[in-house]
Image (cartoon, rainbow, N blue to C red; front, side, top):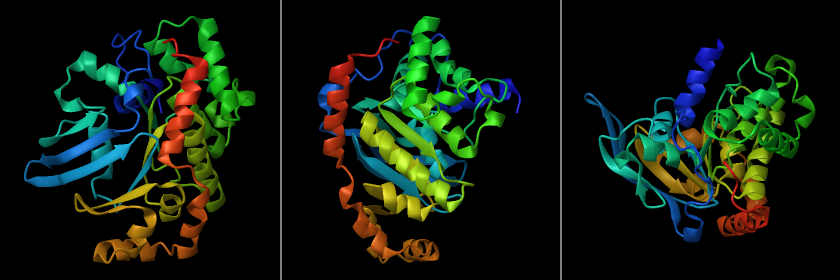
Length: 312
C-alpha cells in the first residue's frame, strides 16, 4: 500500500486532522468524573436511504470497562465504531463522551475529543515505507509541538512497554504479525488516550497468537487504565476479555451483559452464533482473576498522579 493511501486510512479512522487540537492535554479532560459512564450511546439510529443499519442502539460504557461487540458480517459493528469516533453522523440519537455530544461538535472541538481515542486497526495499518519507530512517532509529529528529543523519549517508552523496542529500526516487512500488532497498539497509545478501540484484533491470527493478543488487550487495560471497545467475530476472545458483551443482530442489540449472561440467552440468533463457535462454558469460570472496572480506574488515577499530565 502506498504511503499516501495508508496515511489517509490512519487519518480517517483515528481522526487526526493536522492543525487541530495542538496543545491539548490528553487524559486531563474528565478524570474528575471517573465513576460515571464514560460513553453513553443513546437511541442511536443510522439509515442509508431505506436501509436501517443501526436501529435504536442504547449502550453505556463505564470508564475502565471492556465492552466487546460481536455479531455476524453486516450486523452494523463497523458502522457503530465509525459513529463512536464521529466519522459518521447519526440519523437520530446521540453519543455522549463524558457528557459531550459528539455529533453536535464542530471540526475543531471534534478533533480535540477524538484525540482521547486510540484505534488499533485490523490489519495493523503500519506505513510500509516507515520504520517501526517512525510509525509510532507519526501521531506525535502530526499533532503535537514536541521536540524530536521528546518524541524519541515517548516513542521508545511505548515500544519498550510493548516489548518491541529492539525492533525500532526495522521495517514492517521485517517483523512478525504479532510484533506488528504490538507496534500498532504502541502507536494507538502514544498520545496517551483514555479509550482504545480494537477492530477485529485477532482476525487472521492462529489460535495461539490470538490468545496472546487477548492477553495484550488485558495488559493494556490494566497497565494504562484505558476503556476498551473491541469489535470481533472471535467468541473465545470475547469471553476471555469482556466485562460485558453486546451482540448486534440486523442493526439491533439482541443481548447485552456479562459473558455468562450472553451464553445463557435464549435468543435464537445469539444461541446459533454462540454454539457455532464451540465455546467451552468452563472458560467463563476462569474470569475471576480479572480486575474490575473500578480497580482499573484506580490504577489509572495512580498512573496519572505519578507521571503528571502528558505534554502534547
